[in-house]
Length: 64
Image 1 (cartoon, rainbow, N blue to C red):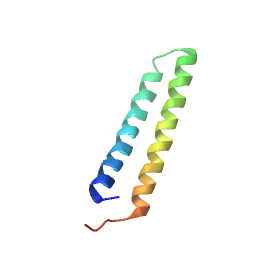
Image 2: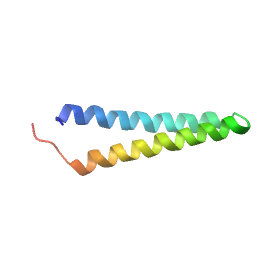
Image 3: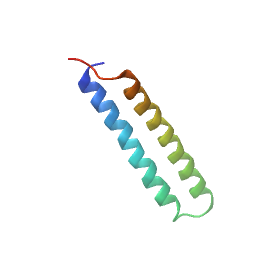
């Protein structure tokens, strides 16, 4: 994976973190099962984002 691909991969992880935060805020306004479903989706987005960020950080700096 090139450095540019690594950058876009990390941006996608950051985007998923924003999605997770937005879903969490939105779920506070909804009742019942919708709240639970959005919180589960938010948690999944956060876990995927965490794995992406972990993969990018562990891979380290890439030389071009």
